[in-house]
Length: 551
Ligand code: HEM
Image 1: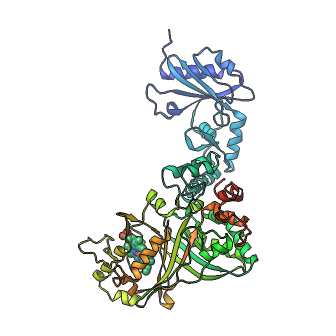
Image 2: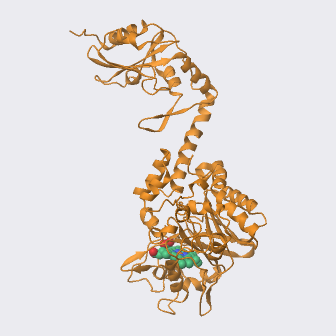
Image 3: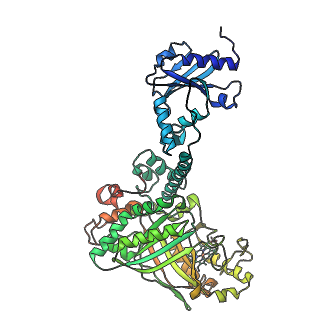
């Protein structure tokens, strides 16, 4: 028959028995029993602190029913092993604590150092300073233990480390276009050390990870358009940068992990032909200008587009600096615009810009190429235009007139009812439907300007799965739907640049570094020279050296 003891007597009894085991120097009570938050049926969590050797057999010899594990039997480290027992009809857990190990982690914590161990169910892991916290907080029932205060160095070091890790993981997930369902797999599998091919193939992307096209809206952006100078050396320099861009983003981004630095690189049709080979992505072609009754969407020079985004301009600026340092004299800058977030995501005309952007899976499906162009799956298209606004002309309109131009209310940003909305409204002309289904694009427009030179502008940037969608929007805006029923935004806005670029997937972009064809046709005519899978049966994963995703 079990002996009936009250809780106080029970704790003393078990601790006394454990303290008598060879090598044990101290015994503590932890968990809810020590914290005073226990219920009558709560477990009893004891720890035995031993110096040198401890034999689980001595614990077994006490004869308490249950399971006694070997030292290290729970994986080692913080979970060094222990026992699950029943004593007097109560559930008792015993944890083994090696005093040398505990003292080591205490010394480390006092200098702000700690490790993080993997532990089942603990997604972020368990820190080694847990054993220090135990001796600080648990009730010592037998023997002597140090009772450390919270080390100042640890207080300073731990929060930024956890925060930094969390932000970096989140940023990685976003960069990896983890939007839903299948897209969640690359992150999970990379963390488990699996080959990304397994996961992106499953997602129908032929192993191709998209660039950070779908980054969240940020507070700052730089739009950098460059022209590659003639000469194979210059082409090689640019290819080299394509291979190293991920590393540069990682290096600069790590200086502000919570600020989501990303960079999307795109190549014009001309640049693609020259740098990548003769087979183009299906929709890639030089930007064709639109012109009607004095309204012009010009096509301007530009081989490469770098769309750099972050919460802070300093990160964008540093990355742009590093990119230009790498490109050296191989390029000339055709255009450089520094965009800023203006109040509630408003453009300088005062309207909220971006509201109707698709999100999540719809955004992904709207901009990332899939099976329709398998060799270029994971890629995207991006069209950019720099617009300058005539603010005097705009401000001469009443708010109601402005709302009719955009098709939304200005202050509350609510879409006008169809019974009120003009067919020439901006949001009417840019709504494209196909077989009754709306075809979306993703915009990340940014205001920019210079008050000294009276320059007030919107940098339009639209990502799409096919450039035809954006081109149809432009046709509606500039020529009209029907012809002449054009976008009145253009009465106060002049497009001064325009370019269409293909955004290769990450492996395709990085694979450019290994391609020295310089447009020569040494690849099979029916395969894109850069498309790894078509070229050598691999995915050019080897060229992911130092890539951002595999740490
Ligand atoms: C002067 C440059 C531009 C400005 C200031 C501007 C501003 C706006 C604003 C304020 C909205 C309404 C809020 C929203 O849904 O985002 C909007 C919507 C939209 N804009 Fe623009 N935009 C410009 C150029 C363009 C261009 C060049 C295109 C495409 C070629 C475009 C495509 C769209 C689309 C697709 C929508 C969403 C329509 C909807 O689904 O309701 N915009 N734009």
